[in-house]
Image 1 (cartoon, rainbow, N blue to C red):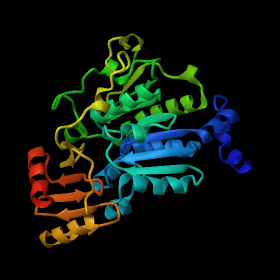
Image 2 (image 1 turned 30 degrees about the vertical axis):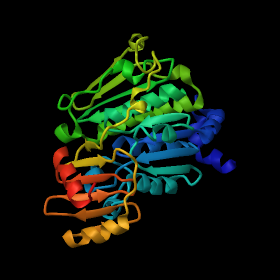
Image 3 (image 1 turned 135 degrees about the vertical axis):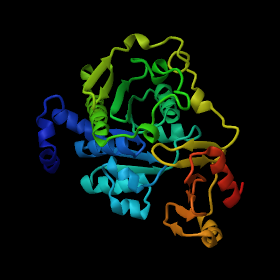
Image 4 (image 1 turned 60 degrees about the horizontal axis):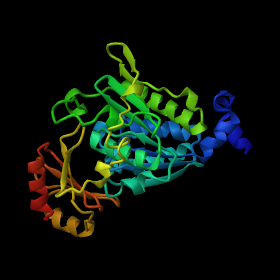
Length: 345
C-alpha cells in the first residue's frame, strides 16, 4: 500500500533492504523472549521496522526500578503493576497498528518452550539468565530457527548470531552456565542504560539482515562491548563449532527434556526477589487468595496478578499460572517458606 511505502520510505531507500526486503519484513514472524531492558529495545526496533508479527514472552511485571533502562515503560505502568508483556504491547501497538501481537505472561520453561518458540522465523534473546538461553538454544537447533544472543551488565555487553547447522550454538561456546557467584549480575554490578541500547542495536541489525535475507552481511564473530573503558572487541568463533556438542553435534536436547523433581526457585536480576515456580503447571485461584490474604495487609489486584503485603518486609506477587514472586528476600529457602506459609502446598 502507498501508505506503507511512505511510512518506510527511508528504510526502503537503504539498498540492502529496498522494497523486496520491506515486504519480507511485513511477512516476518519474530519471538522476543524477555521484555526487560534488551527485550523492550529489540521489540521497539522490530515494530518500527515493520515486522508483521511479534510474540512477546515475559514472566514479570513493571516496577519503578525498571524505568532507568527499560525504555518502553513509564511510571503509570509501574503504578498499575502491569505485566511487562502487556505494557509493552500497549506501547508497541500505538507505534504500529499493523503489527500483529501475541502476548504470553508466563515463564519460559521446558514444558512450554517449543510451543512458545516455534512458528516464527527468528528468536531474539532479551533474557537475563543462562537457563532460559539454553532452552532457546535447544528449540533453535531442534527446529532450525535462528536466534540472536545478547547480554548486558555493568557497562559491558555481548551479542552473537546463532544459525543452526551453520554456526556454533550457545552450548558450543558455553558448555556450562556460569556457576552461582562466579559471574557479575545486575544485582551485584548494576547496569547502565546506554550499554543496553548498544547491544540491542547490534542484535536488531542482525535481525534485519536475517529477515530480509542478506545473510552475507551477517556478523560471524562474537561481539563484546565495554562502553565505560572504551573497548570494542570481536572474537572469531567459527572453529568453536563442536562435533561433540551435546546439542548441535549429538542432537541431544537436555534442557527441553529436563524434568524437575520439585519446584524451581530463581533469584531475579536487579531485585531482592525470588521466583517460585511449581514443578507441575497449575493455576492459582486469585479470587480465593485475595480474600485469604487481605487480613494480613495491603492487597492489590488486576486481571493479570495479585500483590499481597504479608508482613513488614515481604510481599507476594501471584500469577494465575502458579508462579509466585517473593519480594524482600534473595534467599530461596526463605522464599519457599513464605509461599508454604501463606499459599500452602
